Image (cartoon, rainbow, N blue to C red; front, side, top):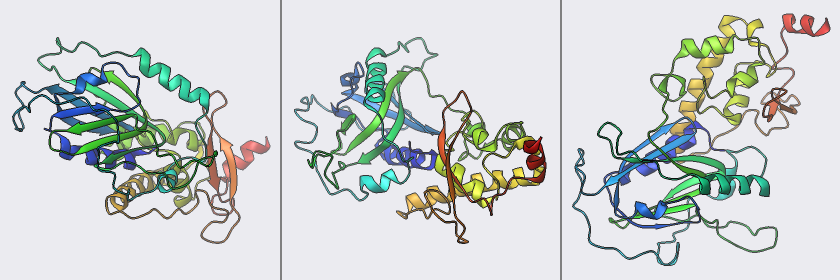
Length: 336
């Protein structure tokens, strides 16, 4: 799934639409009451880790940041892509896939996702301390993305040989003539955004002390890095890359590593994530050091394994045994 830098870029794509009124709603999502977004105003857009939050409010409601008058009646959208501007997209789905794990969503996972969206309904926010906004929470899956004023186009045939464009989960057309398209994401209503700046690796309020304390636990370091309670937005790509940059084996026990090594790892986590975001905003690709590689930059053979807690989710990992050796204390511990 998209990691913190990608979701932050999605949020920046939606920001110019804040203050505009939704004229049409389309998409394949079965989430209830999405059609009710028609004639509402997009009030706010926030990103936190791997999650995106959009707020909608009544057009007649006072909007403190200004905005245009309410538009007249609009017609329902007959099709999703029939009358929209279908420019060729600047990024192919293959490029987006480089940001994800080498995996595919199973039909069962798709079924569960659809069922979850169908069962959730819009909450009543009328009692929320003067705030009558309704919030949509987006959590993106494999190949999940947002497009502004363009639809994603198929860049290769599917297994059946058909050239079918990806189907949007949600399309929001605005009174300005622009539109936002959301792909492969879970959508549900919430009363307010769940934002924890202290754990967000891209936030200026990221709490290094809290993150450092988490890393010092007697747990494999690669497990801790994916714990969104302390490293919101940090995903599998960032995990693999920063462990290589810090020369730390993914299964190293955090409690056995030197404080200086953990601080270096934190520095790499923040710097790598920030640099990745800047490259995305500049339209540049990311050059991996270890992720998906057969050899490290020094020419050593790279090992690959599926690592994770015994009772938790396991993720693909890549590491160089020569550049990222297990520490002496750990080796002695394993020999006992």
